[in-house]
Amino acid sequence: MKEVTLGRGMIPGVVPSLAFRRDVSSIVAKRNPSPSIRASFPVRDLFHALARSAGDSDTHHAARKFLDERLVEVAHLESDLPHDIAALPQWLEQRCARVRSDYRAYLADRHAGQQARYFSCRAHALHFLQSMAPSRMVEGAWLYGFLKHWREARFAPMCRVYLRNLGDGDPGCNQVSLYQKLLDRNGCADWHGLDDQYYVQGAIRLALGHHVDHYLPEIIGFNLGYDQVSLPMLIAAYELSEQGVLPHYFTLHVTEDDAGASSAMKLLGSLLDTADSAKAREMLLHRVNNGYKLHRLGLDIPGIVASFDLQKAFLAVMQPCAAYLERVYRIDCMERGIRGRWTDSLPLPLLLQQLCNEGWMHPDEKGKTRLWQVLERGNLLPAPGYPQQVVVDWSARSDEYGKRLPHTDVADLVPVSPPPARRPEEAEEHWADFNESGSQADLMEHMIRLLSPLAHHTQEGLKAARIYKSILEKGSELYSQHSALFLWHGRV
Image 1 (spheres, helix red, strand yellow):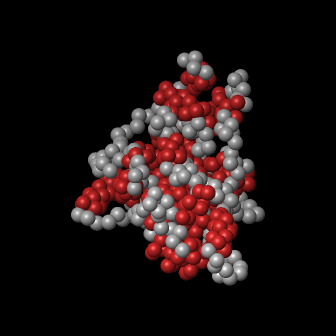
Image 2 (image 1 turned 120 degrees about the vertical axis):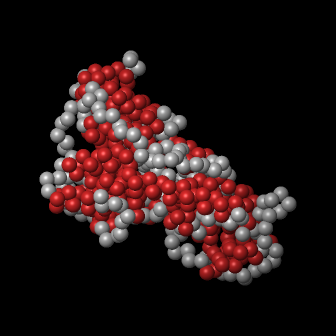
Image 3 (image 1 turned 60 degrees about the vertical axis):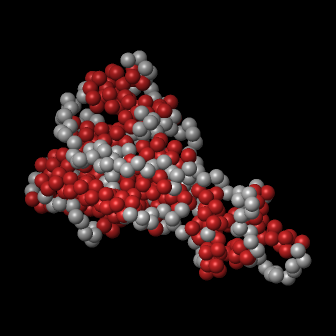
């Protein structure tokens, strides 16, 4: 992989103020308690409920309860966020410098012959891509709620940062579109049934984005804690390249300034100015700090890397094929005159160990194992991409892994059923019911719906991003009222 060089800093220049009306914000500094609900959503279900649509009242109540529980969870954790906001620019610069220094040290170690730090095989790398999907497919979602405050100049920079994640309407720069292409290209698109632990960060992002009115200080803190370019990400990009995975997505913003952190600092200053006492200011900073610590929850990049177990991954891929493999092996034994070896069905690990002992994992002169040929003949060969790569990599290490099969716990290999897939036309329906004679508020509401985490990477959503950006740049309500609809139909 071509080695990347980090930009000198991550603090951009001042964002020019816009000519919007200075309406009193409806965003409150004091958060009301979340409504009580009968039962909590599993994290994975909450993620998909929030990602599919704006959600019903139960979903939103569940999201607020989820966030409140997570904030209680992080309250006791230590934090390195400066208490003095005047120290934030230097702190961010030091964080960037530390990443540069540590990455140079990593490269030096690798050039000196040190083994890869993250990925042991290609299946390991593909597992990483798949497991990162729940957070990467909602990139920037925590900023979505700012879009409805488009009239207020102080929130315009946060809207700009959100649009930047959307590629400003350019499909070649849209974060979700790019990651989806990365998943599709490497056969990792089937991620919707992952365990709950992989969805925590994605659910936090979506829940914050849908409740900006209740969690503004926490969102500011979360934004300050978001590393656009981190050491683990750079290491992952380097080692993905070694495994034949193009890592362009992970190095997109390496040389760019971190506009999100800069915008969050300015918004924090504006928010603190509204505090009417030292106690109120202290409470706001406490909430900002808790939002910053939300990044500590769930699995980070090293945690996802460590969660991969080739043995269990192989057993999970083989589980749907177990009955067929056992039937073929029984027939094979009978044809060879071997009877009475077992009477009951063998547990999957013992069956696979038996196949190992019979040489099913050793490749023939064409490079195919007996296991591969049997699965291919029965039309049970795993899907191309990650599942097939698991079989290839495990078979190459079968002498080592086969001996450990009897001691492998298979209790957690029960497949998880994926959530209902959304209809392809679901996002397009956002604009279909728009009444052209509606008010300015109706127009902007429909525009913002198209910019949601569900729809922004569709053709309609990309177009909406370009129009919304134009409205921000013009800085005029009159422009938004009379020109946005014409822009939509390509008349101006």
